[in-house]
Structure formats: structure tokens, C-alpha cells
Length: 107
Image (cartoon, rainbow, N blue to C red; front, top):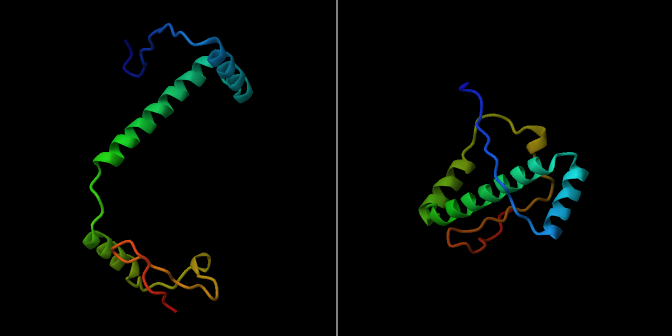
């Protein structure tokens, strides 16, 4: 078997008639086959579930980590600010403190 080929297996899938009709209608509107539509839908659901698992397992932000990140963002780069990155006149910075509460407004 060629290493670059992906083995595709057949899988009989039973869908409720109303679900199948809705999927067929959307797949036609999107210009893809029903099979492709179902493949993408399953892949999107798997990605969503994996993301939810990652969110639960990821390390929680700490006050020290947030302070370090903000310090990095506040460092001058030595380069002029690009025109598209300039803040509008009258902009007031509102930064949340490490406790998550809003800090005093800087002017």
C-alpha cells in the first residue's frame, strides 16, 4: 500500500430522517457531498471536545505570571509605533490588576 494514501473505511451510519434531511439540505447549499459534510461536522465536534479538555487541564494564570506578561508588553521596543498601531486621541488605558479588578485609570 502507498504510504501517502489514507485508508478510508466504510461505516454504515444511521441518522434520524429529520437530521439526514437537514444535513442533506445544508451540504447541498454548501456545495459538498453529504459524506464530506458529515466528516467535517465530526472533525469540528472532536476539535471542540479536545479544546474543552485542554481548557480544563491547562495551568491557571497566577498573579505573578500575569504581572510578568504585562511587564513584557510594557517594555519599549526601541522602534517607532507603526501608524496602524497608534492609539486614537483621547484613549484612556484601563488595565485590570492581578486580582482581576479594574485598576485606576491612567491618563
